[in-house]
Length: 330
Image (tube, rainbow, N blue to C red; front, side, top):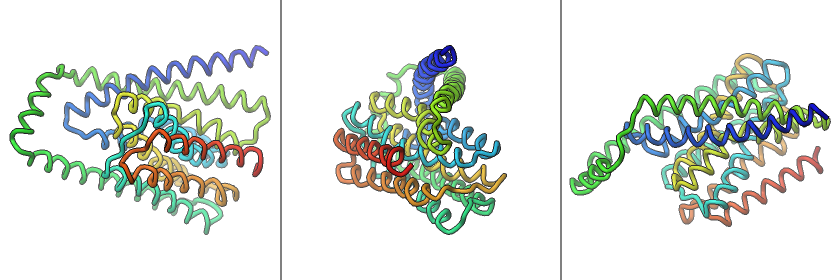
């Protein structure tokens, strides 16, 4: 009885820490980005995505290296499904929709879809994810980062070619903004990130403790308890950004996080040891991950917005997946 109380208290406290830390992280990250001229979408798919994905990456690494690879793969697949169907669905519903630009859909949306297809292609034909596969995944992420850097340079060049009138308007709006203390903002980003990681680790520890008492299988813990627990930073950052109308940051965080989870979250651990993949993950979990990614693109591409009803459809999709995985196919 005492252990249950401790676990529940730890879960509630860690949730409060994560919410506050994510708010600090987003606000200061946006300030730094604006001060150095980095676009919102680039911030989303790089700094925000990688920062909020550290709990998943850490959980995957610890799981694989401690002899529980099923848990690590489950965390990545479960997180990616939850990120899109759960987090973006909830964020679009609560915020009334999330605007999606052509750039993020064409570059980051397609990259997320291609990344999922690459992973499925490998696990369909090999019994385990080996170091050779891991090297390919890590190289793919390096190429993606190169494309991001190239895109950002082109975007800056386009901005510098704008007419003098719009440039003067932008300068005037910049003058009206409060000066940003970069050192303080950077310190607050680090503090927010540390709070996210520590809070999520406590949340995962308490969640897994509760799940173990209930005798839940390891793969299910990875797909749901750990996946949702370690994705709490993405939920808080994405929802907070959507409510603040920072739509590109919301979408970029999720798309960038899913790309990072597969290419680095699975790629790096596989460099140390071969990762066996459960058959049901090949035939069901990975295809569902690809399906929800394609569904997101289809729902967003027409009006360049993930509407509130589109969010509802994504949430329903996740609930159907969870019921099938937990009660029908388990």
